[in-house]
Amino acid sequence: MDQDVSREFDKLKEPETEQEEIFPEHEFVASCLRVGISISDLEKLTYMDCIKILLTFIGQNQETTKTATQEDIDKLLG
Image (tube, rainbow, N blue to C red; front, top):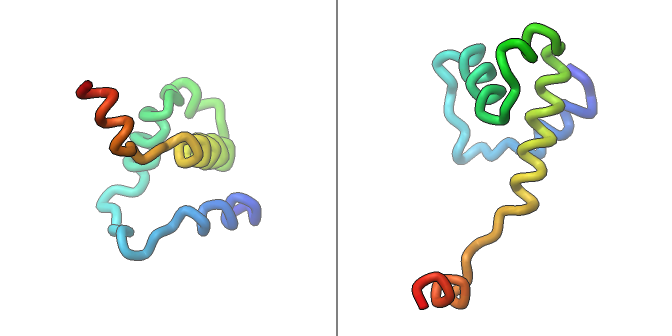
């Protein structure tokens, strides 16, 4: 595995929540489909390209995820 990818992947691992996947290959394909990589794209991209796209997608989502404050809840219900 590419060292940069391996380093980024290790940052995302959380041992407390990690579960063993029953079908890792299918989980990989499902993850790709969830982020918008099509089966046609998978035929053209390398495994490492897909992993880099997934890591980029995960990194972007973690940065934009915000925990709602009481003020946010009041605005929603207000």
